[in-house]
Amino acid sequence: MIVCSCNVLSDGAVRACLNRGSDCPRTPAQVHACLGCSPKCGRCARTIRAIMETALADAAHACSTGCATGCSLVKVAQAEEEIAA
Image (cartoon, rainbow, N blue to C red; front, side, top):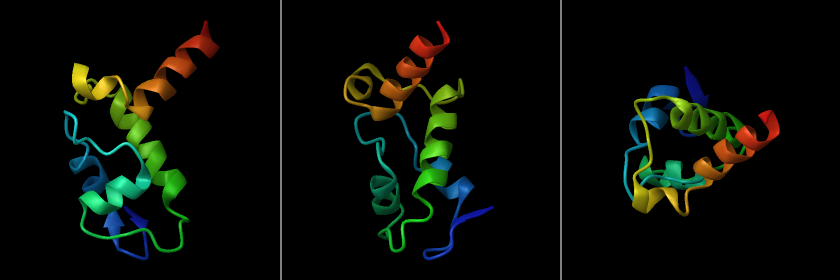
């Protein structure tokens, strides 16, 4: 599915750039940069953020210790856990 019509980015491309480690994108703008483009209209930011959050929850993607300390995705997951408790 195309999530960014300005740059013709698919959800698969977004997931593919979410690699483990310190170079893991933490914002939609960083995802765009990882994929060799830049945000234009910004309408895709929420969708890209949702894909990033889902990828974090997925067992196949776990931030490494070095990445996790500053990773905004980890902060989102921790906030959701606190709300659920």
